[in-house]
Image: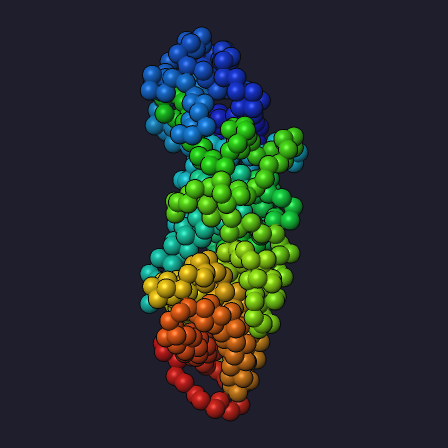
Amino acid sequence: MSYDRIGTPSHQIIQADDEDLEALSFSHPNPVGSSSQPPISPQPQAGPSNPSGVSGRIGQTSQPRTERGWGGVKTETRYTGESTLDEPVSTTIMRDLNSIYAKLLQVLYPPKGSGNNQLLRDWDLWGPLVICLTLAIILSIDAPQEQSMQVFSLVISLVTIGSVVVTINSKLLGGKVSFFQSLCVLGYALAPILLASIISLLVHTLFVRIPVSLGCWAWSVWASMNFFTGTRLPETRTFLAVYPMCLFFFVFAWMIIIQ
Amino acid sequence: MSQGGYAVVDVDDEINDQGNGLEFKTFLPTDTHAPRATSPSPPDVPYSPFNLAYYQTYFDVETNTVLKRVGMAMIPRPGFIAENCDGQIDLYGPFWTLTTLILTLYITSTLISSISQYLASSHANSNLPLLSTAVSVIYFYGLGLPALLWGATKWLGVGEWGVAEALGLYGYSMGVYIPISLLCLVPVGILRWVLVFGGASSSGYFLVQNIYPVLASADNKMTRLLIIAVIALHGGMALAIKVLFFSNSTIGPDPLPVDPLF
């Protein structure tokens, strides 16, 4: 459990560099020095002409080059800087857990001034799944006995359908956002709500629950707004994209209050 | 993520891309590219139910426009689409009006029952079924019924309106119930009946004023009888809201006490 390296950007998390994406130049792969040390800024890889000579080239033959057509599927192959073929399973799992933790930190407490969203471009749905399941379990424990199954299924379906609807809404309004990335951010932004549900499970006083739930609701909305301001919606439409998110998180906050 | 040392990142297919296809991949607010038109003009986008860009024409609204339309829909007047929406209705307002109404109904009804249980000092239960009830009732009435109505008029040969107009009129007409359900927190039985009845007549009058011209434009005179179904279903809807969400814990005389269904 070594979380001490997380705060620094020189972690193993894949970072994309927008300069290359902007200039459509995938032709200068960065030779990675040694595989023992995580690279500072891995570059998108061009294809079989990788001079680094490090193992782990399985993806290259199937996806030799980044597709450049306007239509069709666009994929990027990126080199993470070390071979993952012969590492222990614990390392793999810990790397994934570390990346979930780093994304959680990025969503909930974004470092000031840095070009955020870099980490989030490498979205995953494991973190949202864990958060959603934990929230459903905690709320169903808190619920009366005969309703716990109902609460569980309701929370799961609300999280799933709600985040999909919110994402589609912001795409329909013209926001430039990747579908799954937005799902990922909304799922991670549920974490304060999860915190509120844990607190209200332990403390049953109403005067503690209401401020904690409302505070965590505000935190969730703020965290997801941070991400969605990057979608470059026009100023006059920002509220239209934010309002559904407020509703989405408020359902859960209200459930926690009313339990 | 760690597939042979590579990460494959899928990016959504951008339909409305005209110049720089990779532009949407950066989310930095400091991007210097000039913002393009966010909504396509209708002739550019071919009709397809699976094309997200097709629906963007119905979401081409701004905050003030939506707020103005929601406000104007509470005043029952004819010609809502022509006057307030400039002939082009949006679907953002109707959908989120319905969703807000669902949330408001859920919040107020659970608050009412929680307070009454607290006063009666009985064991509190969370009333979560109310949420699924609210979702099914409101979405069926606000989304399913106008689609059915539009299908019926289409079948009877009225070609004057699209399904978006029907959805929009019904969605905006339900907006008046949001303040009413907040006012229904006052635990006086007769006041709740008056409020719900007032909301029902206001939004029902709005619906009739806006739907009847469409029905009357048909050659077949029998089409106009559909307005009776619209009124009857609207009354049923108001009754359902009153019975399902605001039926218990009233102080004072309740002229028509109804048992809650669950």
